[in-house]
Amino acid sequence: MDAKIFKSIVCNDTEMIKEIEDSEVWTRLSNESEFPLIDNHVLNIFCQSVSNLLSYKVSEAATQRYLVRIHLIRMLQEWSHVTVPLPSLHIFTDGCKMLKFVEKVSKKYLTDDFLGTDAPGETLICLARAFFCLGMRNPCFLPQLDFILERITHLEPSEEINLLLDSIMKNKEQLLLKPATMDRIYILKRVTLIEKPLIENFESICSKINTVNRENMCVTLQNATSIREVLDRMIDSPQVFRIASNVLKEMLVTLNYSSIVIDFIQSILELMIVQCDKCKKSVLDLYPRDLQSCIILLRIDPRYHSENSKKYTLELLEHVHTGNKDDALILLSHFPAWLEIFSTYLSDITGR
Image (cartoon, rainbow, N blue to C red):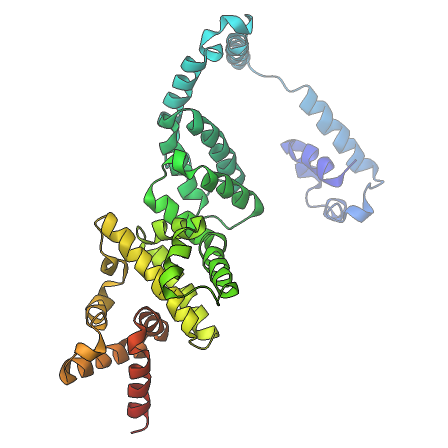
């Protein structure tokens, strides 16, 4: 017998515990390596405690209350049992009625309270898979899928989440997810959905460097499905645009400001402008607000600036560079006509 069980039985008998709780023998029970104890007095008390507990009587009124509760529990158990053949339960065998039933239950119970911030990842993934299958059959379940996916994108990445999001992205045209949810998926899977398409298409262009020039580079990229998907997301999301711009900036710096990288970035931006014009959007809105005034000036070719306006533009760019060097490099990668001019300007002011 375990010492803990022994102590629990004796402790439940308030009369018996008083006799030995202060004794040395009782203190030694805490050391389980010395258990069982060979002590007649303790064994007698243990036997008496067991006897008292077994003979404990409940009042007649309490017994009746317990019997009523047990009877009610048994009745509920009987009512909940399926006592008829399944074909008779039309609500669960009729496809349309079953979908309606699930829709009502999910709308009522699939709430923020039910899926709290501490909801297990396994539960969210299982629910997402279920509503993904239902959503493919009936669009009424897509809001619930969107709601669950928004929660999943805030979890730590895992293999199961990656597999689920891959399935979602393969069927994104049918699922019609909210832009915010799509942004979260792209940010979570930035390597696969943003970096990889850009780098792979750049490598493809580099392999044809003898036949590809600035004019036909746009055509080549426009025909690339993976680039079109990235562009579609970039023009809708400043966050995705920022990630893609950072990837392109890193390519430019890594390859020592190579002209082919500059041409590649300009081709991407040209396609973006065309896409924005079709959708009646402005590329300017994709940049942070605090940079937009500087971008308006950078859009003007340096040759058409007056000396004062050119100086003011360079001062603005210097201010951006001082605050965040990456932001300045991204702007220069987008407006390469200023690259050499700004480099000279920085050298002059640092040499003073």
